[in-house]
Image (cartoon, rainbow, N blue to C red; front, side, top):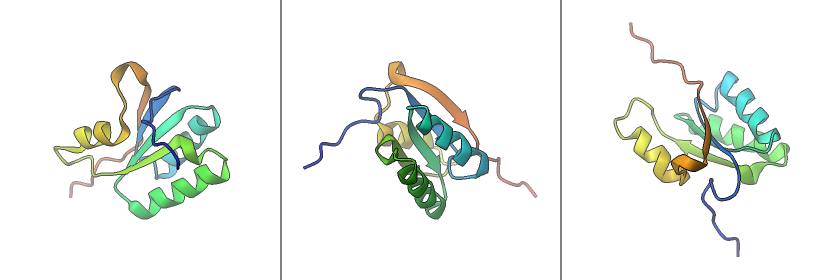
Length: 104
């Protein structure tokens, strides 16, 4: 039986929003390759699945936690922190790779 761990148990941790888009995917891959655990946030479940596949191909699937949420939601920040288990002292990096919604 595999024991579940918070994303922040033993290593540096990054939260990347827009993680499944072009820049976010590249950044997430680089962070994983550098040995940094990543909580990848995006609103698109299919793109998050593709991101998980990439992490698996890199041999870093255990270091990626994907979180599907919409950052325009009032509860998004709470959802991200709750799902990731990240506590402030363990958080090494945050990166916002999400595009703002179109307005017109």
